[in-house]
Amino acid sequence: MNFSYYIAKRYLFSPGSSNAINIITGIAAAGVVIGAMSLFLVLTGFAGLKDFSLQFSTYFDPDLKVFPTSGKTFTFTQSQKEQLSKLEDVLHFSEIVEERVFLEFRDKQKMASIKGVDTNYKKVIQTDSIVVYGEWLTENDYQVVAGNGISRELSMGVEPTYTNLLSIYAPKPGKGIPTGTDLSKAIRVEKVVNVGIYSVNEELDEQYIFATTPLVRKLLGLSEDKVTHIELKLAPNASPNDVVEQLQIIFEDNVVVKNRVQLNDKLYKMLNTENLVSYLVITLIAVIALFNVAGAIIMMIIDKKSNVKTLYNVGASLTNIRKIFLFQGSLMTVLGALLGLVLGFIIIVLQQQFGLLMITPSLPYPTRITFMSFIIVFFTITTIGFIASLLASSRINQKLVA
Image (cartoon, rainbow, N blue to C red; front, side, top):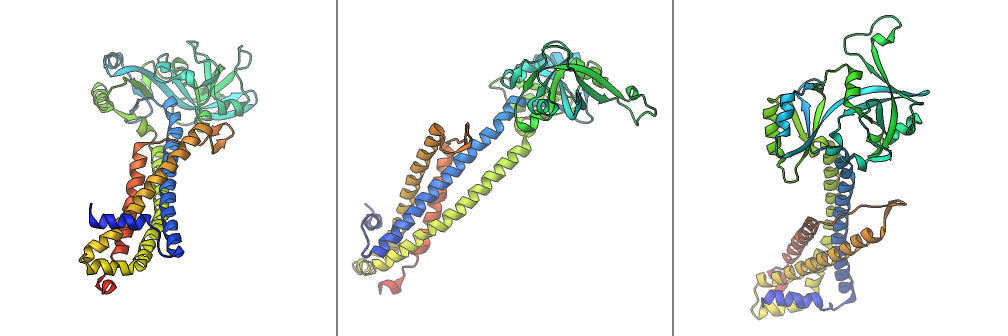
């Protein structure tokens, strides 16, 4: 066994000559354990929070979304539909027509976005998972499904009959506003019935109502081959990049294609930034705590000064003596990191099983344990501990052993 490692292990597990040194060493070891545990809890907490925040995008956002390079709409020809249908990696696609409209129900009004979808939409998006009351659209063009927020704001529920109708107003295309009092020259209006209420998240629930594409095209005065975008569902093992290249060929590079990450790029950037900042803050705290290891090693050097002189006199080099205390600090850090990871793992498992920390009375704080979290915590803590031990062990010089 390596001489320096053997002595370091003896020093680590044997008490010092005074209670003060034992207390300092205990505090340093506790700092390592708490630092590792805290960093692990933060990483698993943010991994869970990221999954929780992004799960809503899987309900609403498709695998790929095709936009026009310019303007609001583009032409989706029958030939392009046939070519798109032949792509093996594309399971389903849906034509979408979307625009801002003005809603009026009884004596209440609201601005919202109307999203016209075809019958394939429920194959692209799991509409059953977002409808919380009523039902999804049928082939009746005078039906809508409203968001939960819109429904509350307009005091509009699911209407089983056509007695209470929702009025949808959209401006006619063109420049300027016609003079006079005849608003029909400037605005199109359609009256529909709300047959369902969906819920995804607060923002989307207050933004969208769903309708059929024929209704929205009629409201906006668009031809049957015009769409604002196309949403695609890919095969499980499909390569999104390959599909994007094929789409650009079909649409002759006149479209922009975005995947789910690109559709939520601001949310991803925000979550990643918050995760990084939290990691750096906890790491800074861990640095302060782990430099207690350096203080403990220096105190141990002072306590073992006579032993160090004896080792030097019997032939141990200064390098080997420095390695003794370098190994001692490194072993303390490694064992503390492992113990901290075990404690952190136990706390996260208890949180997942029993909901120790609740966001709401029915919603526990989300967490997700990943292998990468273990790796990041272990290498962060051990690296800082090694540096602290190296600085402390470098205090041993010729003057100390003379």
